[in-house]
Image (tube, rainbow, N blue to C red):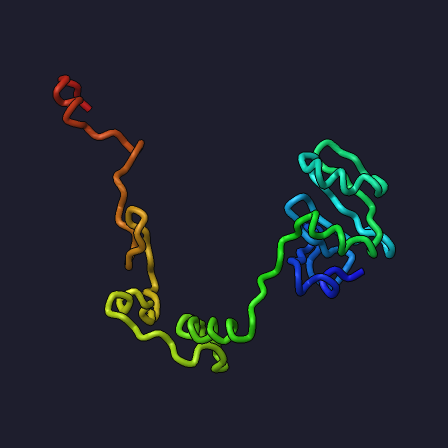
Length: 182
């Protein structure tokens, strides 16, 4: 059974974590507030229910238990009974938008859509405000031939010499105060 084709317009259909794409209908799942529904075989759906949903377990008591674990119980439900049980399982519904609402959304978000290189996308880009004008990236010319880091910042030219550490000891002020000679 292809859950995406059968229930995809009404409920959210997700992929099993092992799936890469929607190409294999055996890896479709319908996430619900009580667990999930997935295709178990050609005749049965697997219905996983968390242990804290006692009323759902009571409704599913007539169906055989496939797996009973600590947190989840999986029931085998015939495909013909699934439409009557889905309201009890409370699957996440897919957002339904009428054609009028869809056109309204398109008009409201037109200024915020990206334009693709082939010209598809927003017909009217948003006007540039003075506050965001300085945030636009400026074209970068050629990078200097020699770059270095100075205290974590990229600078042109060789890196600044760092103070030597652990090199030959020089006579410091502290050793001169102690009367030591180098």
